[in-house]
Amino acid sequence: MNSNNPLVSISCITYNHEHLIRQCLDSFLMQKTNFSFEVVIYDDASKDKTRKIIEEYTNLYPEIFVPLFQEENQYSKGVRGIAPRFNFPRCRGKYIALCEGDDYWTDPYKLQKQVDLIEKYTNASMCVALNKQIYEQTGKERIDQPYKGKHFPLIYFNDLTQYFHTSTYLMRKSTLDFLTKKYLHLFQGDTAMRYLLINEGPFVVLNEVVSVYRITGIGIWSSLNRSKRFLDSYKLYKLLRKNHKTRRTMYYLYKETAHLGVGIILKIWERIRGA
Image: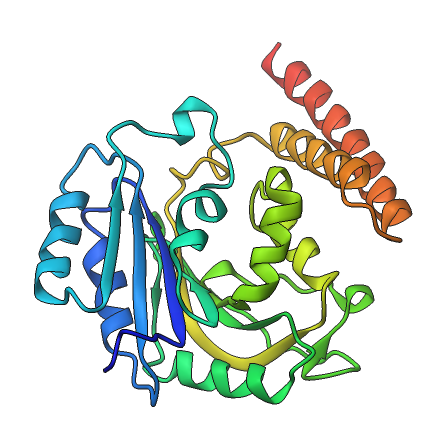
C-alpha cells in the first residue's frame, strides 16, 4: 500500500488493553482494500504493557501505524473528547473509521464495503453497520438486528431510533473537521457524536455485522449505577440544547427533562433500597 496518501484513517484509543489490543490491531491489518489506510493510535498513559505492544506493531508496520503516547492520563485530569482533541487532527485520510482498543473488526472487507457505500451516497455524513456484543463475564452474545427504516439504507434525524456501535463508524473527515472546530466542547461520548453528525447529513447503513464490542463491566459507563447514567445523559442533552444551535432544541429539551425525571426517581429508589 502507498501510505503517503491514505484514503482512510483508523482512529484507535487505548488504555490498559494489553490482553485485548493484539486482536484489535490484527483486525485492522487483515483489511482487504483497493486503497491505502493508516492506523492513528493513541494511548492514554496505560499502566500495563499496551504501549509496548503498540510499539511492537509500529516497528513492524511503520508505514501504517502512527502512535501517540501520553505520559499522564488525560481522562483522569478531566479532559474529554480524547479522539477529536488528540487523534482526529493527526488523521490524513478522507474518511475516519473508529475502533477502540478493546473492540475489534470481524469482516476483512469492512472498510472497503463502507467506503463504497459512503462514496455512493454523497450526502451521508457517516456509514454505520451492525455489531455483535459479547458479555465477557457470562459469555453471552447479542447481535444487532438488521436496520429496516423507511428510507433504507439512509437514516435521517427523525429515524434515529436504533443504536449503532462506534466500532462500525466510518465518517467524513471534512465533516469532523467542521464539527470539532465549532463544537469541540460537545464531543462527550458517542451519543453526542451521533447527534452532531446526523445534523450534518443522514447515515448510510451497511446491514452486515462487521465488529465486536466487548462488554467487560469495568468500563467507565458500565460501572455507573442506573441513576448516574440517566443523570449524566440529562447533563449531556442540556449541554446540546444550550450549545448546539439547531432546530433540534425542543427535541433536546424533551430528552433532557425525561432523563432528569428518571434519574431522580432511580436515585430515590436506590437510597430506599440501601437504607
